[in-house]
Length: 357
Image: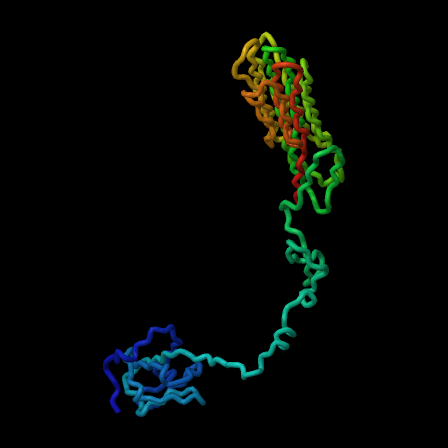
């Protein structure tokens, strides 16, 4: 047997190994010892690399016994060797279950269910499992905190009642739209009323932790002016005493001596974090005596839109157009050439309540 004085390239390893180091006089006696004992079973001789003072030894110069973890050399360790290193990777055996040993019944029996988790209540759609306060190992289905839970929309006056679990409500309060101005034209005298202004808007985030209900008031849309009369101003909407929004101003009636009738301003929000003014209405464009293009003024939009369009320029005579209900939009002005015409009705207000946990 001949020990190598060089490195065999075929024995180089790229894996992260376990290294046992043996010093002369401690782990072996140079010139007489014929084996060293590994700290861990390396499994197979093929995974073992042995060096004498850094020089790798051929595998045919030693053998390995798994029963006692000994690396036995076929000759005494040469005199002068001061250190032996045995490098190896251990093998972890994989066990495959026998056919038929894993069944649906066994899987079902080991499944994690609510009883094993000690869940105290029935599941609710959209809830999540949370640790139960004061209970060791117990769980409960709980609502996600802080998120939008529900929305209530009020198109008529009434009472807002707080749902369970709600701590804050974001309200949008819209006043009623103004009614369009009327017209009372005569032969060859074309009058055009102005539109009504849009309702104001207030937006407010309210802490309702200590509130159970609030009075909701919805402003009515202003009436359209009949004949030789102005439209009326829309009603005020409010959410309790927290915030409110006034209605848009009613449109002026048409004038026989003034072809241009100015539009009217919208209502205004108050008490909210954001307070907005409704859109102004369009002017009435008459022709006085004689023919020509003419138009009843368009209704102003609210935060939610809804203002009525202007009456047509080609109409000889036309009542104003009603605004969309529950938008706070203004009604449009009437257009008259012969006889009385009525302005459009303003859209009633609305309150939207977004409710948060």
